[in-house]
Each structure stands twice: as structure tokens, then as C-alpha cells.
Image 1 (cartoon, rainbow, N blue to C red):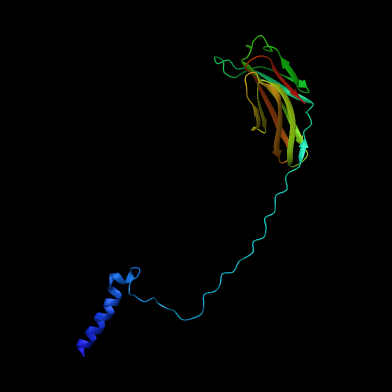
Image 2 (cartoon, rainbow, N blue to C red):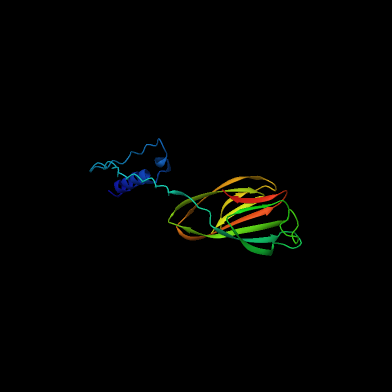
Length: 183
């Protein structure tokens, strides 16, 4: 009887401890479970995402008055403010340096004005320029036109939540005439 029990234990051990039994194509028989069938997968409908409505595009009217600051941009002096004033509208043109203290092709100006924006939206305006141009709204760059003597038109678009904003337009003279005009 003990011998029979030992043979049964050896056969069972051989079935569970045989390394070849876990390899593909082995003689081990698959385990079959009896019970309920596996549930079929269900698809949960996902509602379609709404396409965001684009913010309205508004033409920005030219501010009536701009503060204009002039800077000396020579490498030896850095970016030093030498003058400031105010102009009605924005139509500036310089064949050379605007002041005797400035060196032609090594100066810049910043024209700034507060904006009153009626509400959240996209705003657009166009500038005619000659020189390098950077446009900022509330300190964030929204447009740039580069080139030492490049001239052209720059259409500026930006988004804003509405209310008061500060517009700053920087023009750098790097060769030839410099010009800036709101169109």
C-alpha cells in the first residue's frame, strides 16, 4: 500500500514538476473551466466633442495718441533712452537718425498706447514699416518682421480677454530709412 501511494505521488509530481510540460507542444493537457461564458465586451458611447467656436475677429482702431521713446542702440552705449514724447496717430518716417545724439542705423523707438478692448476676442490691425519691427501686447510678443532695411506691411493678429491692454511697437533702424505707419 505504501508502495502504491509512493507511485501515485511520483506520477503526480512528474506532471507538475516536469519542465517540458510548460513548453509549447508539450504533452500537458489544457485546463478547462466549466461555468458561465465570458461576458461579451460592451461599447460605451462617447459623446462627440464640440468644435470650439472661434473667437470673433475685430479690426482694432488706431489709438488717437502714442507715447514715443527713442533709444541709442550703439554697442558701446547699449539700449539707452535719449528722448520721449507723444504723437497723434502713428505716421513716423526718418531718412536718418531723428536726433543728432543718435547714429544712423543704430537707434530704435518704441511707440506705445493703452488699448480699450470691448471683450474677449481676436483683434487685428496692419502696420506699414521699414526696418525691424516687434509688436507686443501686455508684454507678450504677438508679431515680428525682421530685416535691416526690409519694408512692407505687417498684419498683426492677437487674442485678448478684453478690457485694457498695453500695445508696444518697437522699430529698429538697421539700414536705410526707417518708417512706421498704422494703416
